[in-house]
Length: 302
Image (cartoon, rainbow, N blue to C red; front, side, top):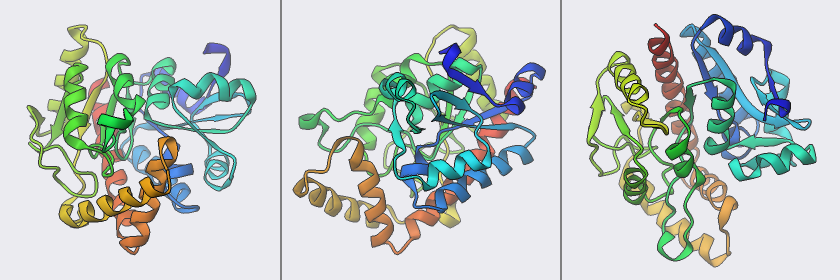
């Protein structure tokens, strides 16, 4: 990867001086939000990270190389172009070799972040076990990446369209710690809870940093999930969201929408059905995650 990775000079400077850095995945810019909302959100997250005295590093694929630290023009391109690939870990080499533009998922972003020496990544929600996975075997590569790549991922739980309980079961099997940040319940992405309780929780970024450092010192390997619930004043009703998702899942099955196209379809339809409330909630949880991620990154280098 060394010959195919370009690290932005500001990120390099932060690495050389030991400043905290927060990596950001880019799939939400190209596929998770409509243009220009994804771009606006990404730029706001970068601003939040900088206000916490950390350096943001948006990850993507452009012009035949992985870019760790996209500038505003590059972020806008990912959000506005129609031919940007959604890039998981398995797709990285193919997209780089073909010179195609790509927006990286959590799994690809974790790999690229670790390759560059970055320990903390922020996202909205991790991928996980899809509903009906007992027959489709549709399980996100994010989970296996968390099992093998030592990056802390700050999220608001798994994406709401997934099976939260089974996602937690797989993470347990893979030995991935899921730590609730000021919560004892696994967040439900748009809602503060999913109905699934967590074994581990912390009340402060300092406690989170201590637990993360202990994980590293023990040589346990793999990533860590920091589950950070959406702020209460932006949370949506879980039962309402569940009702919409069940209906949309049936619609997706009828239209044979599956694989990498399924989640973007469900998220877009959710935005339409809730008249934009899920999009506003997504903005809010991403902003909150960015702040917590930057504060944890700072605590880890203190």
